Amino acid sequence: MAGAAHRAPTCWQRPRDREWGPVSAVRLRGFGWRHAGRKRWAVRELDLRIEHGERVLLLGASGAGKSTLLAALAGLLPDDSGEREGSVEINGRDPRAARDRVGSLFQDPETQLVMARCGDDVAFGLENRGLPAEHIWPRVDEALRRVGFRYGRDRSTAALSGGEQQRLALAGVLALRPGLLLLDEPTANLDPAGAALVRDTVAAALDADTTLVLVEHRVAEALPLVDRVVVLAPGGGVQADGTPEAVFAAHGAALAAEGVWVPGHPVPPRQATAAPGEVLLAAERLALPPRLATVSLTVRAGEALAVHGPNGTGKSTLALLLGGLLAPGVGRVTATAALADGDARIPPHRWRAPALAGRIGSVFQDPEHQFVTSTVADELALGPRRGGWTEPEVRTTVEALLDRLRLTALAGANPYTLSGGEARRLSVATALATAPRLLVCDEPTFGQDRRTWWELVELFAELRDHGHALVAVTHDTEFIAALADRQVRLEHPATLP
Ligand SMILES: Nc1ncnc2c1ncn2[C@@H]1O[C@H](COP(=O)(O)OP(=O)(O)OP(=O)(O)O)[C@@H](O)[C@H]1O
Ligand SMILES: Nc1ncnc2c1ncn2[C@@H]1O[C@H](COP(=O)(O)OP(=O)(O)OP(=O)(O)O)[C@@H](O)[C@H]1O
Image 1 (cartoon, rainbow, N blue to C red):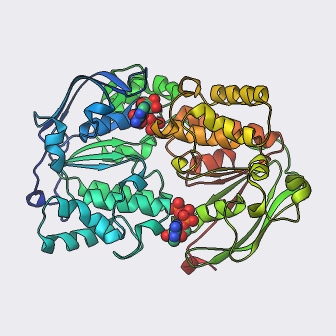
Image 2 (image 1 turned 90 degrees about the horizontal axis):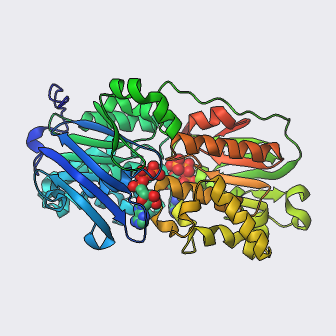
Image 3 (image 1 turned 120 degrees about the vertical axis):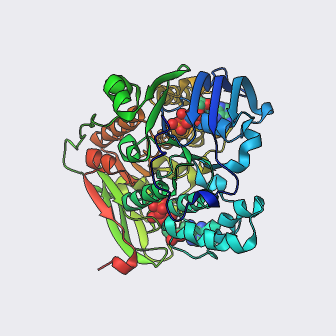
């Protein structure tokens, strides 16, 4: 199935430029991995062969082991971090021996950025691999341009939005021109136009000598990049393997039911059943970075408001301001008595932490910024305990949320070891634990399988029906179509009226 052989190499990805050589074959024999401290194997009994030049879409429900498998191929599962069964080989050797030929984009791009300046970050891998200096900077500039990065080489890596981080990390990987390209949800944080650009860029970077393994929940968008689909079964092994057409024809309905986004299985809308109620929160002339365009809006009880727009237009900053987690530099945020009890004269960012958590729940763009305890159950109990709830009340709430968001089996797990989808579910559950009237979520559905996505839509819709309000910053157009009653779009100031 070496389906890529007929494709013409592109100008920026010539085979002769591939200094570190191609990958002739990837071979897994009875491979299994159990992360340290876990009873369940993340992947098990995997027999898989990926040929030179193949382009594979790796699918599976949240927690099925997709990221773990990519880590195994990248040689990033140290022996002391878990238990191994069977073998993984690249070009007949341990993946650690093939690292120079492999380029990996991780699920959380922030963990991948190592240098203080953006240009240096892209150059880092090339320098590490000993590419002569005169070849490095043209390649860095080309890669930054190809991913639509808006800033120059000197921009600080600490001053990037989520989507900008993802573009930068991808530029660093593509600049390597690796023989084996491993991409874990490369467009999850991107606005729709940016996601299309990045898919085109990846397509243009693939030549006959590039082998691709792509993890992407949104299957329809990924299909033009791949010629083979491999579905990991939740209990271990491979559930389906073949061309996209063959896999979806034979297994489409079953995969959709298990949580895989399958083309041709649309989700029904979940619109509000009643008109919105009283105003809970008003934002007046808030100035958002980078160019300090101002935004005013109100949030009412019983409504779901979607905030969307291109990467880097200040959406996450707006979420922090509405959530009372950032003091406005310009403009103000006011809560009405319906939200603030006796504190309506005090702006939310000045409320005491337990009062804030009881009124406004926040879900951050990167869930890992949110976790402060060492178990999933403690993380959920934290807000209610700080709010002075009794232990039986705390226990009942924690158990109900674990059950509702399918986290019961992970109650004792460290939040930092969760899969991307599990961590996202925990961050939503944590924000809900104190039953706040207003929920402000930054990308609540990012990286979710279809089942969890639908469960989140249902959960938010139920809250709305009970008079809670939701503000969701999102690039997810299906989520907006299914749930949002109202939309606010932020633009780059150059295009503002
Ligand atoms: N470092 C770790 N330590 C312990 N357990 C881990 C670690 N990383 C992942 N796991 C567990 O291994 C299982 C597989 O996780 P993995 O991230 O590979 O899943 P995934 O298919 O990529 O999921 P998602 O679609 O949610 O990102 C999950 O149950 C997760 O909790
Ligand atoms: N810590 C920071 N210091 C300085 N500038 C920052 C910082 N974080 C973000 N920025 C800049 O502020 C602007 C707005 O960032 P923000 O994260 O609010 O955008 P966003 O619309 O949420 O983007 P995305 O869709 O990519 O998540 C961006 O131009 C970004 O480069």
